[in-house]
Picture 1 (tube, rainbow, N blue to C red):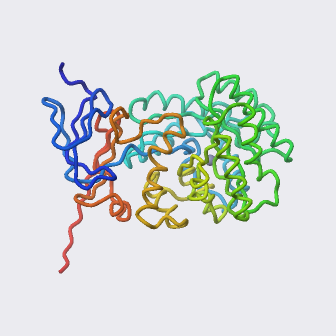
Picture 2: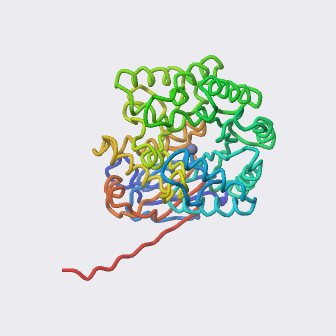
Picture 3: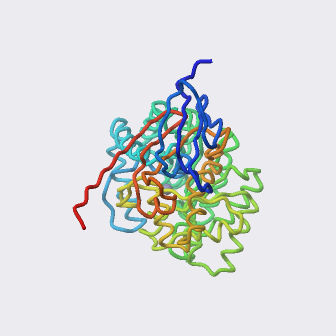
Length: 408
Ligand SMILES: [Zn+2]
């Protein structure tokens, strides 16, 4: 049989856990074989040059609609207000252009799977959502996008939002989002969560809730993680529910935190920790090691890129990995390995996608780090570029950097 457009032989790359480089043979967009001296006559061959390779990187929580807006005063409320104002001026083309700019940056860094919460409310209507659904079509096969209909400003607190969420799901939103601190009082916040799960059941979609995003536990609207765990269990939505932030947890005692992580793990609720925003706005982030030790599915993501919530960001998941490693105890090679799982296979599994492993049967999304002869840890610490990015067996990005030194 003649080779197809999604067949490929990637030679001489070092997967994690290997001492010497191997070859990766791709057939019909999937990894067929990983091993030494593979052959595939007449198939396109890419030479990895002895560089480390990772599976495609994953951004499980990236606000493409609100990226590259600038602004803000360094507080959560200031960020919500600044963004609410900016949203009044959003147009389809404007959202599309900013989102696509960010997606290109993400791809250059090796990200091939993105879940994107998109604001849905009476200010912006479905303008951003429609733009992101169009982008999802346009980028299919290169970067997989999961679009979340997200009520950032609340549901009851912004009358009209509920109808818009329903229409968003009818139009093809993949996931229902929630913002469990965005109502006027704690009972309103609980009702918000119940409504999100009602919509999840009605449209048979996963749940993705922004929760517990405060510096301390004083405001009860920011202490609802265990309530979400209980509703998840009641509704049978374990393995299909994800929380973003859970920053409040960082200010609690170890025993209280253990109580929360056990409930999350028991209910099958995953957590996405967002170090760039959590550290900027709250000075702390949920404890990744404790979540993992308790058995909670945990991932990392950028959240925002260069807006009022986070004025920084390169949309590079390896930068986010390093930021997490700088601020939590992941400085050892074993620690870094644990984090690398959180931005590859672990994150993909959380999104219900799977197949982001370097193993036969996985989708052939491969990222070759530009560090010939080095291991993954050195490549990570050196913040090297991505020499090759392969998505579904096709080369989709290539970055060549050169440095010339005139030194002794
Ligand atoms: Zn977010």
